[in-house]
Image (cartoon, rainbow, N blue to C red; front, top):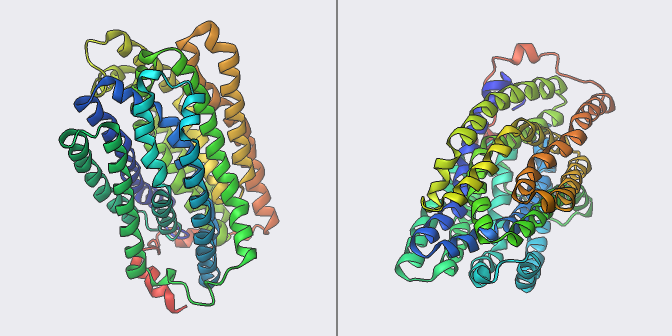
Amino acid sequence: MTTGKQLPIILKFALPLVGGNLVQQLYNFADGFIVAKFVSQEAFSAVISTGSLMFLIVGFVLGMNAGFNIHVSQSFGAKDYTEMRKYVANGIYMAAIISVLLTGIMMLTAKPILTIMHTPPEIFDDAYRYIFPIFCGILATCAYNYCACLLRAVGDSKSPFIFLCIAALTNIALDILFVYAFKWGTLGAGIATVIAQVLSAALSIIYIIKKFPILRVTKDEAKFSAKHCVKNLSIGIPMALQYSITAVGTIIIQTSVNKLGENTVRAVGAALKITNLTLLPYDSLGITMANFCGQNIGARKYDRVKSGMLSAIKVGLVYTVIATLFLILLGKFAVLLFIDPSATDVIALSQRYLTYSGAMYATLGILLLLRNALQGMGYGIIPMTAGVAELIARVLVVVLLVSPLGFTGVALADPIAWVFADFVLVPAWFYCYNKSCKGNGNNNNNNNNNNNNAPPTTTPTDIAAATSE
């Protein structure tokens, strides 16, 4: 990512991520769809009511692993492969320890958390049966996400996508087997998800061992290093907390939704299924920019960071128009995947939620691009601060708007939170970019113009060849 025209490189890297994130969404999407069709609408409500709780854990794991691989990306950009492998090894140690701790904590607290969230009694048991096995599989979730972040850090976004496709097909097949054939209900959907995650993790590990010799850690490089662990944690934990803080805000909103009754739970849940799909290109573009900025900061090519961000923003704005029109004009048809057509009141609520969200998608796109770019540049605290701003916004919505406005207050929560976060991230981007340039000496590669037509250098073959260095 440190040579060649930025826009083609960004798009080439982002497109497999879009596919991979789409497949990732299919896990919960398939669970909800199959449960809704083969069990009951109440069981569907139970599955979607756990979405914010799943985001709390999966988001923490994803943020942590992405943070642990920022130094990997920067070392790769600087061609310091020995240092890179030390970060890889010590990142694995930290990720494994934290995952085991998270598993124990969430297994013990699943029921109390569902109670605190005011999960409606009629769906409580099904919600617990779905979420408990998923908590048991946190280590597998972490293993896959660490491998995926590691591969992306060295320029490979295609392989994680392929492994997720295999896992998603497995998940759907097991959903049908466990839910429809075995009649295990929401428990079967949860077990299917965990098995699929184990498969994706195993495939990723085998692939890295066989195809990426540059990532094979030597005995000396595998030694525990307090310095490398601290540097990994200094970015990984703020990034993990940033996701978790955002998730806490969504849990607060979900609690308010639960209090408004099952119809509201179903309406918001169905709408979120659709918005989660439409925001995937934003997520993918953001992850791309984290890796793009990380590698170019490591290579001290600051002009490429700036021009790459401008290219990504243009792509994001084009997609914003498409996504906004889809949500406002076609959203009510999309939610029919989960809601019975006769439930016209629920469909109307879902459409209102999608309209408010779609109208503010430009602010969401800016949020995800800037947040990921800052993380890729090595700034973990500022994105976490933006997450705090989101949390404050959602708390204010619950306190000030939900009571007088009801469902409308709930639907406004996310757009208001996005605006609050942008107030932090936009000035922070300019400050951090200028600080990075000045702090490292604006040692931009003056050969950028000469390199603009050079091919990207991060294919698996090229990476493997670098092992001898």
